[in-house]
Length: 98
Image (cartoon, rainbow, N blue to C red; front, side):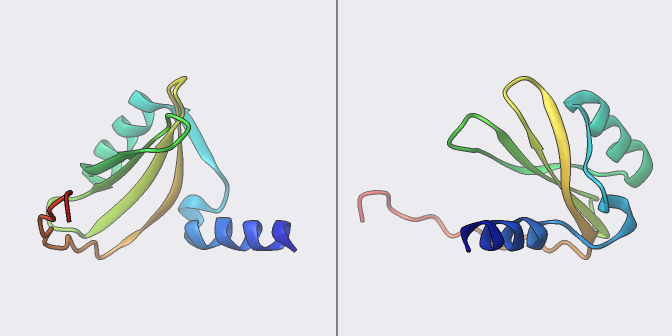
């Protein structure tokens, strides 16, 4: 049952578009270069995973397209999701002591 849930969660992260039908992985610099040249996307958000990976959201300046990549500590990046219509949400500062 856990395998089915994990598979379902993994599939939910991946867009059904042809662009990400199969994992697309390469060195981080190469992936960033392709996304910049082909879609004019640049990083707008990032986070570090519990195992040292880097998750990045890239989008165009006007949000026409977006991509999410995950980079391993060894520098290999994989495109995990992509789509259209990115909208940044206003971040509300929160008191870490609360």
